Amino acid sequence: MKSYGIIGWPLGHTMSPTLHNWGFEACGIDANYAAWPVSQDDLSSFMGQVRARPISGLSVTIPHKQAIMEHLDRISERATTVGAVNTLYWDEDQLCGENTDVIGIVAPLTNLDTLPATALVLGAGGAARAALAGFKELGIPGIAIANRTHAKAVALSEEFAVECVAWEDRMDQSWALLCNTTPLGMSGAMEDATPWDGDRFAPATIAYDIVYNPLETRFLREARAAGCTTISGLEMFLHQGLAQFRLWTGTDMDESGARTLLLNTLT
Ligand code: ATR
Image (cartoon, rainbow, N blue to C red):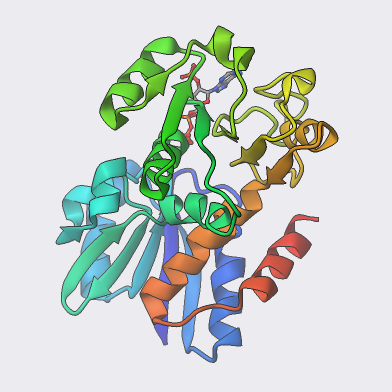
């Protein structure tokens, strides 16, 4: 039986084992996916085990997405651009790193009738880096970033060669695509928060939230009420997982079955 899993610290609740174990069973693959809490101090020795056992593939989450890079034989161009790896897989005897967060962010935008002409990324953390890389890969011409701490937005706007908008001015213009990468709206203390005023949505906007719990954040609820198209963070989570599964097994998990599984897990 092949062994896969996710590492992170602290490794809170994650839907990845549910998704991948369902996929293995549905595809008749003899494999298991586990959740391994691995601290920063233990990362090097864990990576020794990955090579020795060997572990067939790994999902990597906070805080290891950057630190893992020095333990790999090869890193994709996409992951190099983002500066983070969330997926490890083997190519013959080479341990390779990919960033499927970018694939996950882009996937729900690829079947739109028209490519958004402008996109504003809200936030400047790791998810914002993946969004910027993804929107550039898609070829969106007018990409901008706004962040509460302006200096971080400036740094990312320079690194990715996009526009920088002051957080206070973000709602002064309309955007074809608005992408929330902040934790505003996440279940818990932030649930009632939103990065956008409900009465400032332009109806043609696509509102995309990286947050998937709750499934419909205040940001998405108010965008929908204003006539906008909305995309839930569940889509990004689903597609980054589908891309991992494809890298590991060479097989496609059934997308609609996997979406139903995740929806049932979250509700
Ligand atoms: P990740 O790396 O997972 O994307 P992160 O590094 O915690 O997460 O980044 C979260 C982003 O959300 C940051 O850009 C943060 O803004 P700051 O750079 O000013 O810290 C933003 N964020 C977090 N809480 C926020 C809030 N209450 N209002 C506005 N932005 C917030």
